[in-house]
Amino acid sequence: MSASKIIATGAYIPTIDVPNELFTVRSFFGTDQKAIEQPTETIIQKFSMITGIKRRRYVPEGMTASDMGALAAQQAIANAGIDRESIDMIIVAHNYGDMKYNGAPRDMVPSLASRIKHKLAIGNTKCIPYDIIFGCPGWLQGVIHADQAIKVGVADTCLIVGCETLSRVLDLTDRDSMIFSDGAGACIMKRDTSGKNGIIGTAVRSDSSDELQYIYSAGSNTGDVTDPRFIKMKGRKVYEYALKHVPQAMKECLDSSGEKIEDLKMILIHQANEKMDEAIVKRFFELYGIDRLPTNIMPMNISTMGNSSVATIPTLLHQVSNGQIDPFQLSEGDLVMFASVGAGMNLNAVAYRW
Image (cartoon, rainbow, N blue to C red; front, side, top):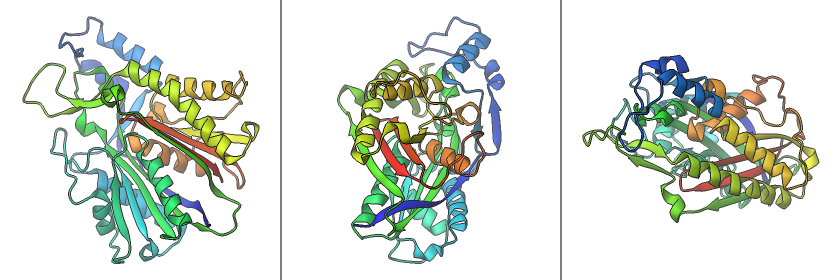
């Protein structure tokens, strides 16, 4: 059985920089449709302390998720130095399709993967494009799909893209609207016959009973029935779910790889909430009887980029692998873990030898 490895990455970071200070002109409401009785400056200050978010990136009107995805893919292809016609599979993770402006219809047909194949001008009819709707863990799930396809011999080279324009599905009266952002990341995965690098362990979990509505779509907090459907979440429920199940999945993943936690160089986790991510990683190490986290184990970019859902891990990986987040560096042979959690509720983890 062949192994698979990431040979190149790419990213598109939107150009519109949105600092927290721009939200001071808003009025925030609760889901009970009542105004939150706190000064807006206090709400924003508390938000920043909890999430770690100080800024985020939005795309300009008219630019879509597949537009960003194609740009990230172009960079990954160029960095890999491959012929784009050699790509066997294009897997694109998103959740809301193409939307050209705030509140626009969610356009998902044809698939974003087909659109990106078109924008890349790939004529190979054996190159199969398809989408994954899996919540925030979608890009990582695409990586798992590509790994499986390569290992069983149905693909040699795969392009995996995560792209999202969450700025188009925000209820501006909801405090949680400050969390979300836009972005796109991509990687090229290729068959590796050396057996030294690549994916060495995985874990996936889905809970769709009461957990189904932890992240959902609903109207505005002001109760305007003419408004489009926005992204909503039950923050406390999401936090509790993630803290309970993600560390366990990470342990299952690492144990399946046969590697030791002492050899783990870095954890690239979905950039959802700084405090939540720190709590997840701390509990993961506690499962091995380790109370003190190693230094420089968890690179973060959420403070300047916000939560771009499926794009958070691939953009973070691109920045880390290019030395853009000090002091984090990746070297051949490093043991790395990826982990994500999101709507569904779904979560996954991947152990990877760089």
